[in-house]
Length: 394
Ligand code: FAS
Ligand code: PHB
Image 1 (cartoon, rainbow, N blue to C red):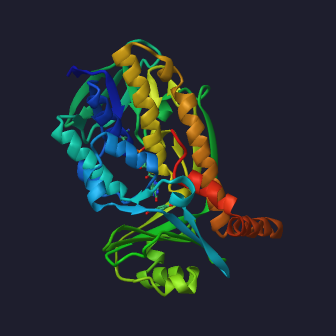
Image 2: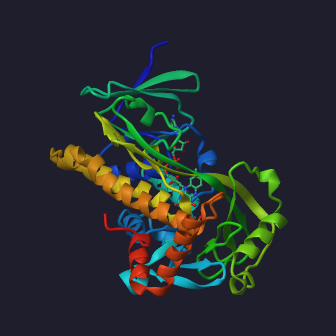
Image 3: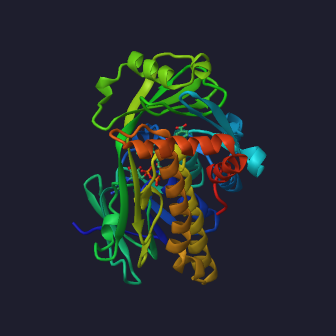
């Protein structure tokens, strides 16, 4: 049976935050796209992931009419607190140092808002698209094929946006002699829970010799907590009691005393990885989001970086397709990677400062302790961290 045909300007692989936001922005500028998502919409919306937005991300969502629910339900934040076992804590005040706020608003809610906007605006999003394959990337007639409900389809397009995450097909479509990857795996993971209890007022990142802990939130009655766990741990190894006991032990006493515990409604373990694939473009293919890079969540950069890529990629596609200029599209990879590497650097430093690395040598442990002391004792170091945490300018 021959394939059925679609034609569009931009074929977008992946209906997560990056793919949906790109599709939404392109349509605002009169550019057609088709989003191919492997999973069902419910499956995508069931993922519990990021929750803290940089200033630039908040502004971008507002600029593209995606901020109404965020501004109603999100929690504006002036920064976050960092604690270290046996030492005073330090509050990284992004408003004091940069004049900018951040926002606690979950990736799940953002993805719901994006799907709602796509449906409202008649966006073309195809869920349960299987066997997606990219073809003729170096030609002026690139194609994408996929299957759905037993039928085969082909999309003729001008450009392909690979927004299909770390395990997607897009990055694999760049020849191995072209693609360079840079990677660091960490010897631990994050165990995260969601609990319907009032959260702490502020985000708190805590270092303890037993491991890292983080207190975050989604709304006034939904708390998000994490503890560092062993790389080989399974969910079954962590009862709620064990989780709360570890969290309360790792937080300073004055903070632990304010934490409301309760039954978890969601529990998951995420491995930590630093990963960058270069270049982020190959012929008609442009990678954005986790398809091109991964950061350990310690710096709250993953989702924000995906939106940063979409800022640069949408700028280049609009300039080319609407104004017939290719300057920004040709520079996309270079422009996006500059900000990617800054976020990789920040996330790596935050992870090294705040986690208990097994079998670490005594010299490195002293350097780790001194890194926190420098932050605690020197306001310019706090200002520098605030400047990176709130999000570097695009
Ligand atoms: P996504 O992975 O979100 O979306 C890619 C989409 O492509 C998925 O829906 C997938 O189903 C689809 N896809 C994959 N292969 C396909 C194919 N062949 N064909 C069609 N579709 C395909 N970031 C933070 O800032 N803070 C956090 O606490 C945090 N926690 C995380 C926990 C976990 C377990 C994970 C995996 C990530 C976490 N992140 C966190 C990072 C996360 O938020 C990502 O940065 C964000 O989802 C990136 O969005 P996308 O690039 O759209 O990729
Ligand atoms: C979250 O709320 O999920 C969160 C917040 C800050 C981080 C990572 C995750 O650095």
